[in-house]
Length: 273
Image (cartoon, rainbow, N blue to C red):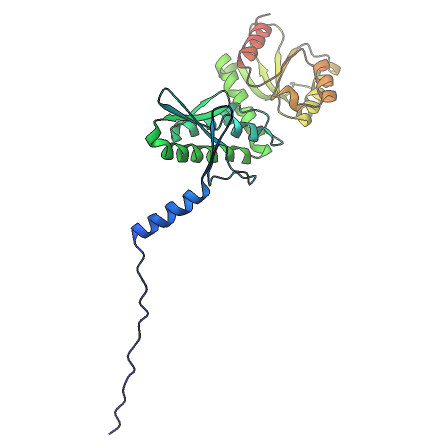
């Protein structure tokens, strides 16, 4: 009788990784990536693993005063965002998003600076908290030009709603009984005490600046008696030649959508005249 023997199964025993082992690996890895440098202005610059979309490491600085340590980007994150083609300033929806992010992350924002304050023993968590906040804020730069244009009109409509009742705001208005008037739409017809209608145009970019100039000139050809206000996203965003033609055609211009006080003043003045 043939007896077959099975070879014993050899098991390859590997050392089980433990939570403590993982903690040591991560601590060693993170510590390797963190470097500090004392500056002449009294700040200590900290280099961390946090990297922006441009590949550069976020600037994080520490300074102690009266026992409190300020952990700050010293305005570098907003400055870097300002270098992007379609982002000149944080206003409207972008500004609201910035404030929401800083609130959620438990950090503060003041005049371009994003920072937090802590005691010396909590510096580590404060640095990582700020780094996470800077990562989220930097992503605001991913907003497309179309998104920026959309938020511009959202901001403008919110401002108008604060000034007038909705039944006095007529959006995408066309002159009645006028041939081809649909080819020359007016962003907003605002009604008030004035005997003349007030037409308001929002201009977020150069193409809208040229279109608005064409519409205003056509209204003159039709012998329309009206007042007009143009609200710009930001004057610096409009080429000088387009801006010059627009200023020649409009009665009044608000240089920036963020200047809500000026929008209120100019609308109320025109509607009460």
